[in-house]
Length: 128
Image (cartoon, rainbow, N blue to C red; front, side):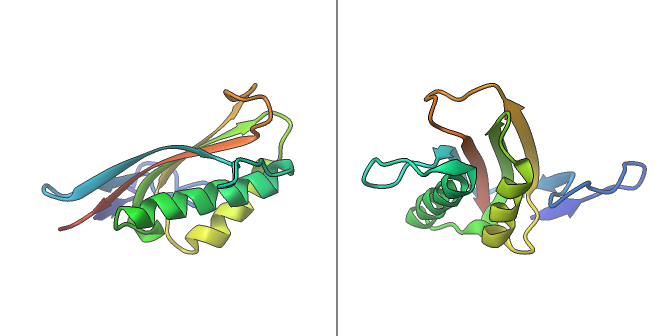
């Protein structure tokens, strides 16, 4: 992958890159939005608990397809208004460490189910 934070554009304002070029022939995985629903169908309490579960779900989907967090090239995070974006980003840091994919975080009025507080969708790519 080729990471790019070009001159003439402000430095990233957080844990992301402005662009990542995926080389031709790379295997790409598009991951549907993951929410804080546990395998038994229960839902985490609070945005931190739900973000933790969403990242665990994302980790399992990535792993089941031969990818890991280091292969992420794009993350989109939807956070319900009134919840702490800083808390969600803290959870993200725990899972991604120093890896910086391209990213967008958006506050929304609500998600598909009213009890969901955060949803994370992703794109991963890996050479070969």
